[in-house]
Length: 310
Image 1 (cartoon, rainbow, N blue to C red):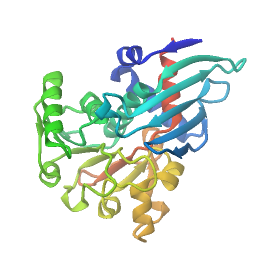
Image 2 (image 1 turned 120 degrees about the horizontal axis):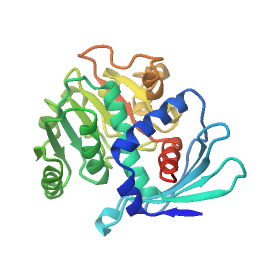
Image 3 (image 1 turned 30 degrees about the vertical axis):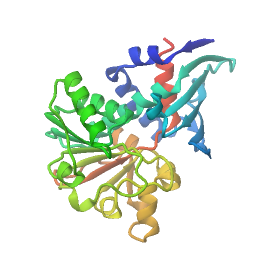
């Protein structure tokens, strides 16, 4: 059995490699070619434990992601997501690979946002705002410029010190102006693309602050309950899911607006895989606000991990 550690994942799973892999997985998922169960989440005292089984297709590799999520880990110098992706080959059912799940998750989540951004953001979108300054902020800052000609990045975080450290680091790495900002409203006023990657439990972003034509990737909330944006933003947007079933069960922002009686299930305009396949239109006008709700599905993890087995 092959074991692929974090360093090898980080070195080999580039965004140029991962973005098309994730896009293909999204299309296969929405076409019903893959198989997976809705993820199971067990709350723990300091975090949560998730189990995500799936198969890439008929007579194709299958496996599961076993992942812990510990929000306080960055203060310890560790990833929030810790775990394994276990891969099985289809002919005999043998386990053939174990891959570091934290690094897979970090890269493929941002790659999925890049896929959605490429499909939904205006072609001339150049100003990126990232709300949050943790690991997913780093990977999104790396991924989004792969699909748009980003001219500047603004970052907001609850800690001004951490936001400034992020801005300094990423500006040097990317060769782009990256600015730490103190207020979300001012930061997003001129944004073309917004990525929310926080641990916020209450809205940090209001729909009234978002200008027409903006594209948003909602990433930080991955369970029912915590919401990063308000109901107004959900209602105003063309709302695209990574998984319709997943959002209807665990998409907190959508469920909050639905519980308030502001939208129905038909407010989910499409899955991103349907947009990528050309089955349903994504952005319909330059003034439309588009939202991609990212929960993550295991086929993205399996496809990314399997590519490293070559």
